[in-house]
Length: 378
Image (tube, rainbow, N blue to C red; front, side):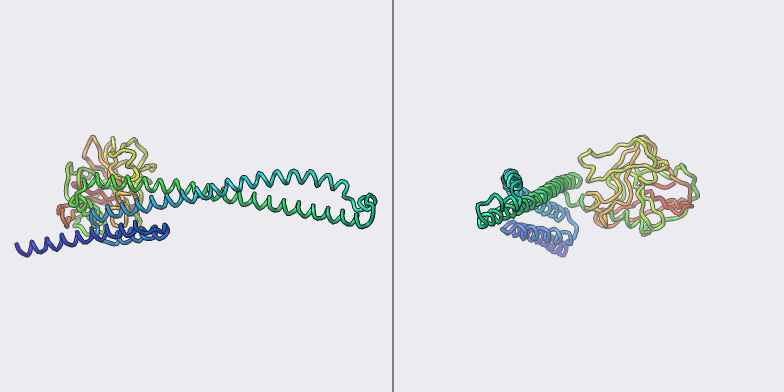
């Protein structure tokens, strides 16, 4: 009992240390007055937090640092746009003045050019000195016009360049605002899915790692039989089970060593998501456009999409969900999407939430292997 108490106190001290250091680092960044240095500070803070062990408090601290960083970058970009807008307004005034001056000078120069013939100047002048003076004056006027034209062209080019810069900054600002919105939504989704509970967070981590362990061949499996396309190979476990928070089928497709997006193989059907549209970016979406029948009966409900969405980046090793999570609202039956050799297996989940993850796989004759996790093979 004493050993347990000592261990608990050490663990508590460690988490308090991490929390204090994290807050101190964030406070240090906010005290920096130079904007670029403050941005660098927050970028370093995000990297430091990402290198630490995965805990809910650490993940929340990452989101907080990323939100501060995104907010700071937005302010910096808005300030650049404001300053550039002032310069553009000044340029517009200069362009207007130069254009007006050039138009007036062009009219006058045209009039002078009509009487600017050297022979006409020589004849009309009272003496040679006056003729030379008029000729040199006309040359200076023409040089001034050329200089005015060059200044006008330079101002026009600068104006076009700064307008382009302004459009680029506006596009960058929209991206930064979208990123800030994404960070806030992902933080809210994380708190919702974990209920702000460290144990729930660790359970989700363990579930994601267990799925990877199964695919890497760390579970126990045995050959069951040859199956045909559409044949029932088992049933989804109708409740939470080993390394699974609830009823769903994890479908994963491998072509040799290459992980495939199931949307490229499954035929287009009508389906729904178990989460609202504003969480599509967090849990991912699908776009089925292949020819295979689905492993479960319609209607199909999607619990998580394939790829590197917010949930996968938080919980899955490598930041990618390598399959899709689905369920049927009409049946728990799971069918082989293609004919092949059926294997059934299990994996003992370790960590804080131990349990048995049951799965099946079908090795097809075309070299593709389909995995079916969180179901009882038969």
